[in-house]
Image (cartoon, rainbow, N blue to C red; front, side, top):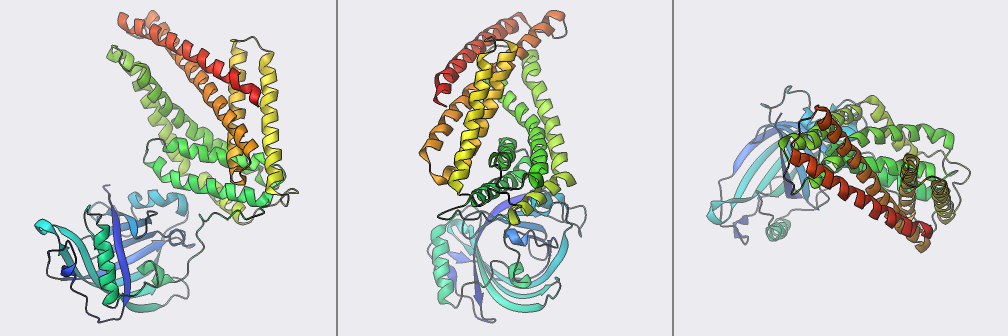
Length: 505
């Protein structure tokens, strides 16, 4: 199914019915206009029973008439007056009465397993005037709309109104034209719109936007701090979900980090929330992070493999063994992640997180000050790193057990980083210093782990070549030896970096 996407930049005005549109050919940069065209547009808008799309300023519709009949999904961009519009023509959709997957996938994280139902029908008599710039290139459209809308929600009603819409066309991005048009339309009788969209006006009030992050006040409690962090990372997870579904680079990593940060908040502030009522969330987030981790690890390894062979003269057989197989593994891991992200279990996790933020089960430390909770959390995390470091000191350096313990220290340092980030709004410098040290430790030990994995894979390839299971050329073995030496040196540098800062914790 082919979907097209564009950024829609437009102005909207309420007007009295029958008022004449101004002649915008006088605007700078406009040299002419086409004859006005009139269309009858009939649209049915879809949402969940809870209005999950409308609550996030998103509209999904099936519309006939005009030049763009089909299915449309409009989403905010974060830029005033601009929206992302995704379109699927009726020729590309399998069922004219069911929203196509190309539109539902980007918002699946919001609608989850809830069915989409018609919530409004809107008919628009639209008269469009296309404005032309140099070379008769279309630069904007002015639409004069007479709207008849009927809400299909319980207690809904019908209404009529008139409005103007002024939309930039193509890649003009002409902010000057937008400003000039705004002034001209306001002088001609255009008023500030009463609603952001036709649907919003048709159905009236919508639920509070679920992605709102609570403000951390002047004297926040421990519960305020935890809820703010949970909402922040919930929003990040929801934002990255659609990107993972289309395999945007680094999206798996960012979504995985969001799930881990949610876990860190849940487990890092003991007593703020009721542990018994949140334990299941920790387990579900752990599972999500592990599933995403398989795709993320292969994504990272592909980049590493490409860098290892950069500038080297090797055979296609070695490139396929080192990189091609990893790409195949990444594709498999991504399919598993997508399946998990379309499961009722995943949707239940998202619902539970939303419910936790909206109605948190508090623990005995909920009313402590945020600073007290932060100090306890950071202190415990630093103490655990020191304890793991003490265990490391008892093991033979370079042994398998020693290397495994380095990985344990790295995971503890990562948790400290997350907790320092969680309390960063409090602005405590001693926490920030601990976070900087933890970042150096995590990075250095991450380099150790990457080099160790690379050396193990090199050894496996050499063993396969010696056994005849893999056909490599002599030059390949020479390159693998050189790469292994570089990785051994990188390990030693990273271990030295770790040793130079661990005492600062």
